[in-house]
Length: 232
Length: 232
DNA sequence: TAGGTTCGTGTACATTATACACACTGCTAG
DNA sequence: CTAGCAGTGTGTATAATGTACACGAACCTA
Image (cartoon, rainbow over the protein chains, first blue to last red):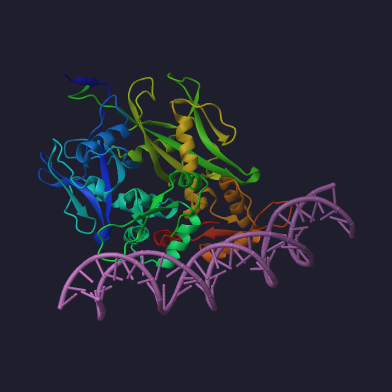
């Protein structure tokens, strides 16, 4: 059933950069799919797809994400819209890119959707070449993540509900690519007042177990609203 | 000459928020057009229009801008893409919003393009109701401007090539909505080392003339690249 | 020439950032 | 059972940065 318009129109897609953090080896990971069909058959690419006509763009991104990770309530933010003519060999395709932050544990086993041969986590510093302009999209996403982490503690979105302070520090060190001082890091966190101490401790670690903390979303939103500086 | 596709496609437009700053009365202004045609005939709206098929999205934004302001080399940045179904009564229209920063002097006399009955500068705190979801777009743009000003001195884009330190301070006070201390403001600026003192002074002012400064773009780009904090 | 308006400048004090080390816990392996 | 390994958790002194604050100089106008 064909659709006809008076003027030509680009196709509209979404692409998602799904970031996760693995505290065990301090690596930032991205979820990629292996394409099942041409163009770029068998290449790795960002998960994504066409936006349906009655569907909000962000809803489309969520739908695509859910197809791969079967997760709901994911932190999702619009990143940038890419629309240079020629970025897709099939014709003019404009893609709205989103990035998602998820705790690695909650998405250990991504499943290939119908348009993918495989789905896999890749460490950010060991990526295969990507289809289309997805390399560029990913770079923009990384930059944004690094920038954002400074004035909003989005780091929390990348950790499990309960986490140790060392995990949090490792996350910041990985994303920002710097080494932080343990005592000073904790001092600043304490002042921010967004952590809730729990009575739980790490389990099954071959050393003294660290206390686990939760994250106070209400206080956090207040602070973001007030333009608080979360530099660590 | 009709264009036919297998699946339905949204139309793609750009909208531009053009910010300018008037130091004389400390007001931040936005350029609006009055619509010539339905929908929202005679309403005020952000300048914008359809993206052509062979044209990059940013190029489209620049083109639309030039039609209204006849300025080139405008600071332009992609803001956000709005695509909620129903935001345009004519059908599904996805709009990539940009914001531009220009020195007011360089665009004193905007000219109405073919799709506009009038073009006018409005103070940000005295706006008419806007067509479509342009109120929302403008709010997002304002938020972004306020956020950005803290970690990138985009304020400079809003001033003439040569400006006094008081103008710059007024700009920051207006955008951020705070009052700053003159001596501390200058101390911080001096440390940033992005200002070049000229030998010129204000002309035709009814009081002691202030020295004019220029802005060292090279040093600035270096600092932005290094993640420098421009909070003032 | 007196008065109005904005310009341009420095210091003392409070706050915040940084550098730095060691005893404790809990597990593991001999 | 105990020695040692790995990671946890805690405080202080010093340097750097931010903040509060006032007045004489320049220039124009009436």
